[in-house]
Amino acid sequence: MGLMNTSRMKSPWIIHVNCTACNGCDIEVVAALTPMFDVERFGIVNVGNPKHADVMVVTGCVNPKTARVLKNIYDQMPEPKLVLAIGACGGTGGIFAECYNVLGGPDKVIPVDAYVPGCPPRPEAIIDGAVAALGLFEAKAKAMKEKAKKAAEKAKAEA
Ligand code: SF4
Image (cartoon, rainbow, N blue to C red; front, side):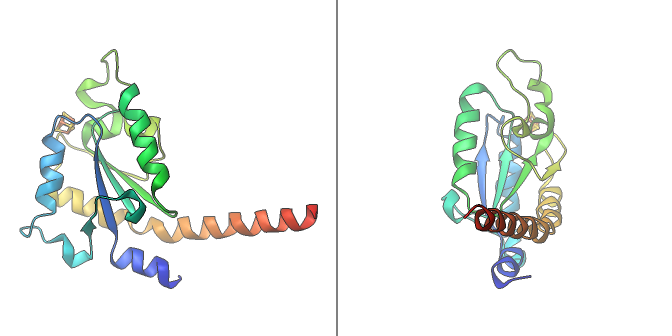
């Protein structure tokens, strides 16, 4: 594993996105970031700029308006990146799933790597989910490398 990916796993920077959550999950995410739970011991730092973030922590379900915003934020994050969907709404739309304007969970718009169930999940579960999901960075980096290698080979063959 390269230096960049080791750094990502040892100190993942996260961005928290509320995608029409009722605020219950957001309070638990914010609680997880307080000194009481001390996520900095895992090197986890909350940032406000998607261009600096390795992991998106998304709460709530998606509607046509937030879908555009969610995709825009996701696209600005550098590869390899992880998405962690929080709560029942983050999984399926939760209690709002049948609403006329709800498309479902964030995975209807962007690829989600891990889910933390609950309504809302406790901070310990959110931290657990984030730490478990970090193991996926290596596989993602490897897939990216393979893709780049294949693209280079194809370009060479076409030249
Ligand atoms: S899962 Fe529950 S607490 Fe979280 S946003 Fe949905 S309704 Fe609110």
